[in-house]
Length: 182
Image (cartoon, rainbow, N blue to C red):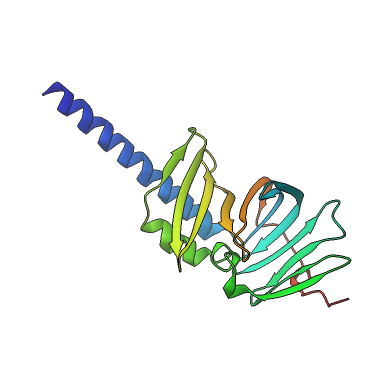
C-alpha cells in the first residue's frame, strides 16, 4: 500500500511539474514578438554558426559566420538561402521553418503534447506533421526556446541550438526583405 501512495505522489508531482512547465512555455511564447540569438547548426555533421532574428509570425533573418556571406531570410511567405555563389528560393510552407516560425501553431501543438525532460536541462516537445518530425527544445529554467531538430528539404538531419537569446528587441522590418539573386 505504501508503494502505491509513493507512486501516486510522484505521478501527481511529475504531472503537476509538466503542466507548470507547459504553462510557462506557452506564456513565454505568447509574450514573445521577436527573438535575437546566436546559433550553432549541425546538418549531417557539418557545423555552421551565426546569428539570427525571428519575428513572429514566420519571419527570420540569419547571417552565417565564415561561410561565403551566407544568409537565410524569410519574409513570411518565401525562404531564400543566398551565398556569394548560390541562390535558392523555396515556398516557406514546404519547409519545417514554416511551423517553427509560427508561434500560434507551436502553442496549439504544445497544449496537446506531453513533454520530455532531457538531462534536467531541456524540455522537448515532438511534433509530427505531414510525416515530418520536429523536435522543439526549451530551457528548463527560463522556458525560452533554445533549439529545434528537423529534417531539411533534402532529408538531412538538422539540429539548431540557440544561445545569447534576447527577447522583444527593437528590429527593422527591412531585415526581412528577401535578397535579390546575383
